[in-house]
Length: 326
Ligand code: KG4
Ligand code: ZN
Image (cartoon, rainbow, N blue to C red; front, side):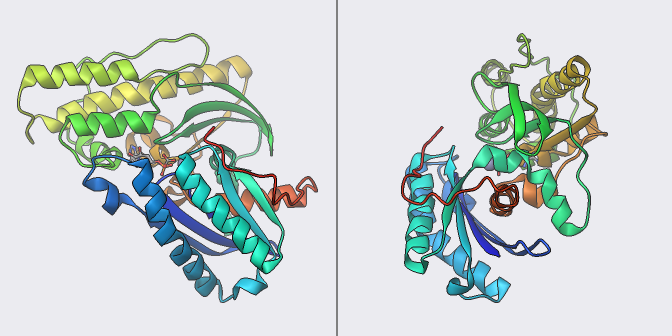
């Protein structure tokens, strides 16, 4: 079976084709809208929706070309229907439904967070192995920071997460305060390598259970930046390193707390912030998907569809499925 998977939950138009036979990925295309967002200093939802209108058909055609298939050779259409930017999701869901209708092929939807959560299993499509269950899993991106206790495929419990900003959002907004372009996460990661992590004492929110908070940190960095006056290249590395540490330290603490309290050894970290080199250094025993599959992609949406089909629990549900932001 050849599954076409689509993800348009945020600012990347993604299309992938998975062959369930081996299984393997025949194509994995991502069109980022970063160029269109840079001039605005962040994601503008309306612009993301309009970019998807242009980039999604291109991504799907490229995926078909890469896989050496024509649309009528597809057997199943899968799409992310939640959570995400509602306009962006609507473009993907409408496109996928229309394609399924035109091709008379089954259609089903996937939860984007579930995609990130089980993205470590993509390793198995490349002949590698993902860590065995159970996991403590952190999904950490521009839109989400959620901690899960994962018992097995599709058996999991959310145990905590951010009460306000996502960690990636904290990277991007703090980057903006430091005069860096969007998305600032990778730039802060790079700058921090030559900075002093202890130079500025930024706060870490200590919340009960497994909850996290980053909005206070953003305010603290803002106050520090104002106190310093003009921010230049001599100040940026120390500010970046100190702020990065204040974002990452609570994430690592909550993971370690969950490991100890729940008696779970294996840790997986997924989502865009999982590309961060310092986070990888702080969690040497954790499993991180390849950077390409940490960021948004449709391969993970295809994988979820394949796994659900294999377990016999997936029913094609074309006309009642809708896009929802949460
Ligand atoms: O998963 P993703 O591609 O999109 C969603 O938000 O769903 O994650 C993007 C986020 C952005 O906030 C970006 O700044 C952050 O991931 N990011 C990083 C790094 N690479 C991407 N944050 C810190 N360090 C990085 N190396
Ligand atoms: Zn994502």
